[in-house]
Length: 204
Ligand SMILES: *[C@@H]1O[C@H](CO)[C@@H](O)[C@H](O)[C@H]1NC(C)=O
Ligand SMILES: *[C@@H]1O[C@H](CO)[C@@H](O)[C@H](O)[C@H]1NC(C)=O
Ligand SMILES: *[C@@H]1O[C@H](CO)[C@@H](O)[C@H](O)[C@H]1NC(C)=O
Image (tube, rainbow, N blue to C red):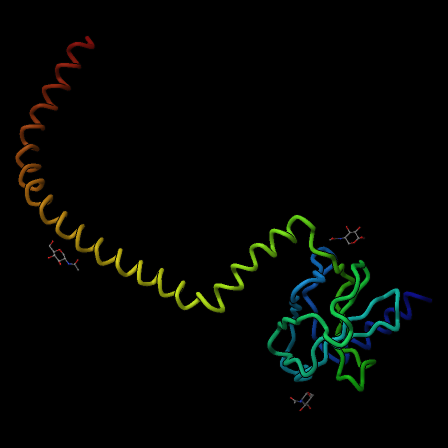
């Protein structure tokens, strides 16, 4: 009975589209802090766009639009916390994404994700994340230009001085070392041959 109904539903979903949600998954869920990314595969005959709904299997009344008019062929969308519902919902393990036709046709489901967890960030990593995200957030916004420019300039400067220093160093060192090496080579070859012979004789 139940398998038959399930098969029917699966067949219905499959007949409407070939979209297949690849994340989130049962083993890789979402966080209820920051933004989250959904990914899927599709084929060219699929509907051009869909609306991304967050649903909760144990609560059929929970039905949150995360994004409308998502372009199907993009294959990925990153969504922020739903503003109309007080942000991400409480952590739980039975959320599911429905990719539906649009907000007026939420029962025309093109695809569904696996059931997945929405978890709260761990407390230690939460504090270290916020500590880390403050500088990170600050640097892209303001020092970004300075930070970007400084390493760029530093890299350029060090590149120049490297080239200059190594150029002159190579020039000075190669000429004496080159001549010296060539000269020393002959001497050394004799030395080495003698040394090898000597050590061979000593070994006997
Ligand atoms: C999802 O949540 C359930 C219930 O809290 C937990 O047992 C399970 O380990 C979680 N799975 C992952 C991948 O975090
Ligand atoms: C959304 O997709 C439908 C079905 O493929 C299409 O008819 C409609 O033109 C699309 N709308 C936009 C704004 O792309
Ligand atoms: C490279 O080294 C030479 C000789 O020391 C110096 O005159 C020149 O200014 C240097 N150039 C750069 C770009 O540092």
